Image 1 (cartoon, rainbow, N blue to C red):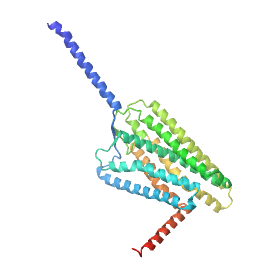
Image 2 (image 1 turned 30 degrees about the vertical axis):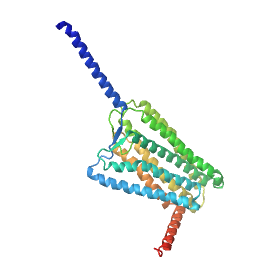
Image 3 (image 1 turned 30 degrees about the horizontal axis):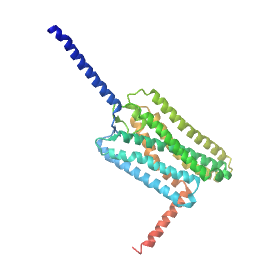
Length: 343
């Protein structure tokens, strides 16, 4: 009897072991596929500093809203600003307004939230919209550089070459390429398996922090991501650099100092915006992974600081915008004085 019971015991142990291995495999599979939410770690600071950071984000976001909505309102309402340059500038303000709105509200909520969680769908949406608007802005800045090149190097042909139809096509193609790039970047990012951790060491969902918590082989992903970035970034940088090379060459040929100053003044605002945006982007993506806090500061520059500075740069250094703003304020004062006796 004892000898007959041994095979039954062995079969029982093997059955239990196979069930345990199967359960472990199921758990491992669920770790790979059933991620329902992530945790946005944010800035690693003391809890008492959260209020200060919240107020800082709130101040910057309020300035973004006021500056960019104000810029769009001035461009739409003043007929003298109905030119290609201000058409591009209005779209730039629209993009700045929306991609900062993808980041700032959620970041401010997380300063008060204990869980700091974001759903899987919310993370996908945030990455998609941010990639869409940031790529579109880069392409739009290249279109603005081309616009300045035509205005300075071929002023007699400016109205012909920069027609309304051509400008609309440039802007539409910028949004289209941004959308295609965003779909591809988001797709390849969320085909990765996230079984290492749910905690994203950032204040929004971005591709690079998501890489760090993936347990997939990243070689193919990094090659695809690098190729996609190269296809988008290299042409825009080449267009901007070549345009400004021709602009500088043309301006240096102008004999009068006043003429040179006037020509450079039309490009200085655009050049400042390009420098801030691309400088912050390159700094973030060239920062080693062992310094994540530096990456957060750099991304803060192009997600919130740049959209805040753009309306200020263009309004303070542009005579047409300042004149349109003064006229708008004068109209409001006249209307206020008109209705004051009635009140």
